[in-house]
Length: 294
Image 1: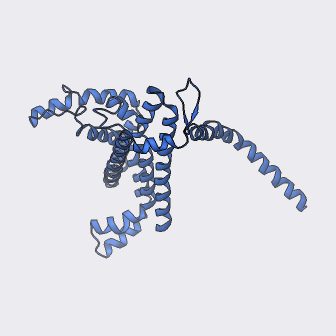
Image 2: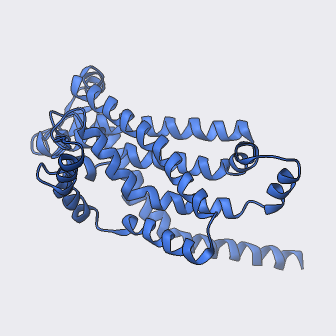
Image 3: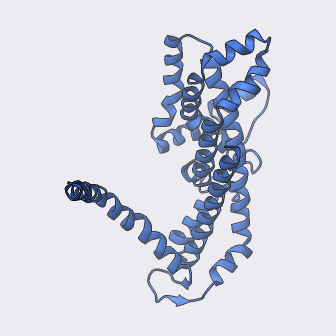
């Protein structure tokens, strides 16, 4: 009897392996092989047409000394920091505000805030270019009410702010939905007990709401860091390939330039591996912080 039971479990396991086999094959072809090939190529000088010349760690050393790499890294870190902090504050505030209103009105606002997340990225960015244009609606309003003419896309100081604004508009509604789901799952009994003890708004927020939301906040934090570090369309389409004067050039754009404009495939591969290691470091740190909190 035990032999038959063991045989049945073994067949069940083998069937499970067959079901996951297509996903494993796809992962090996489209993830594992490209990453392995990038690591291999990063040790060579290659322009896609000529022979590969082995240069060891020269591409990595060159990247760490390259002022364009350092500029792109700083731009990426600034963009990530601004988007992460503002996304958490704004999306959480919107979600918290929606919990104060009725379900019917809440659903209307949920839909309105979420719509930008599903729109065509390039089409919307072209629309934002018109809004930020010197004669666009935004400058018309600023000239009328503040007597100011702002160079939203051509100023090295203001262009990075424009990129952050567009990112928040795109993704704020999506993260708001995540926060809203977490807020609605907090047991109401906690707030009722706190009110009996005379707790005010800030006391309930700090000692009940935020601790109960730590899992959702960790998810949002990690998601925003990963997606903003890999941001490409906003800086490419909205700001003309990381302009003005490379003020908004981030690491993905630098890698694209090196690979497909300058055809320095080995150097671009080294940059992509460094980029991957930075993201991996962020992920490990966040996971360790979560384990310590737990």
